Amino acid sequence: MSKFLVLYRAPVSARELMASITPEQAQAGMQAWMGWAEKAGDAVVDLGAPLGEGATIGDGGNDQATGFSILEADSQDAAEQLLSDHPHLHTPGASIAVHEFLAMPGM
Image 1 (cartoon, one colour):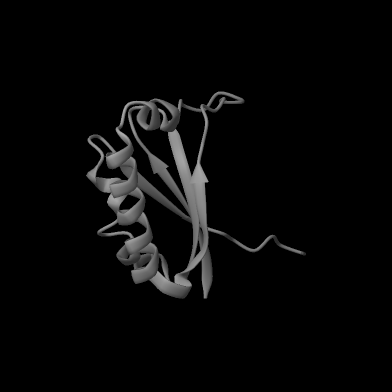
Image 2: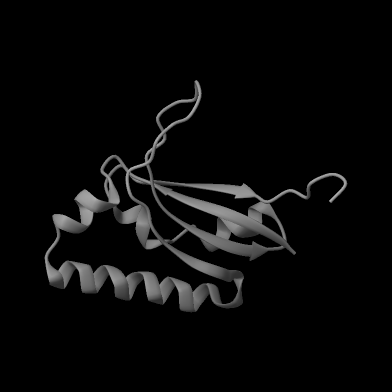
């Protein structure tokens, strides 16, 4: 089994998104996330959290990561399958990046 970092991306920051929804929308969103987490089961190592606005150090692009999770799966494809119906994808303009944790040589 491998671990995967899941980065949730959106055109608006998590802070802006959370400030712009009603309590009912927030509750419905949380229920959708918890439903997904229950369906994914033991693959969810860390459900994660929303992220505040970040900073880019170096010459890289401006990546608007709005949250993260850590999953465990047999392969990259299996991790992607776990995320195929994730509620984050219902946010307009949202995407999900999946990165496998690699072993550090010599460690």
